[in-house]
Length: 152
Image (cartoon, rainbow, N blue to C red):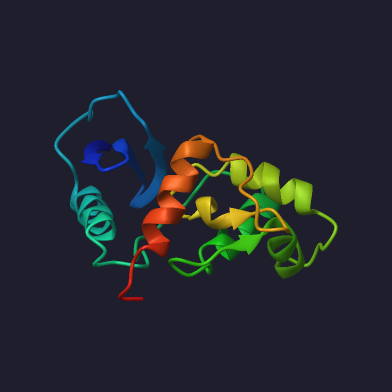
């Protein structure tokens, strides 16, 4: 099941599979497949709250499809607080493989639930913006949006 949502950063398509959010597509042109389920309505509500700066952390059941390593990286990314960043090296160390920062970048790039699993908050060791599947302009926009929130 899928639902579409208009946001300040473009259209988002949210996919539910077996009672979990399984994908979130940024800059989507797809249309929803059916009326949204309760979970998809809740996901849309939480994303709307995020863009209204009323939500800083998502509370949704997620089940992204990936390897054991990718899932460990994605779980660690969910710990990065709103308005903060972590480096690929920080994430690699947190998952117990300090030299795997390039693999962390690969996992970030394959994150199927961007925004909810905030891969946009992962930056280079020097704080520089690096790859983002949604594009560098969108990554910068999301980080600037979060950093502009004075109520944190």
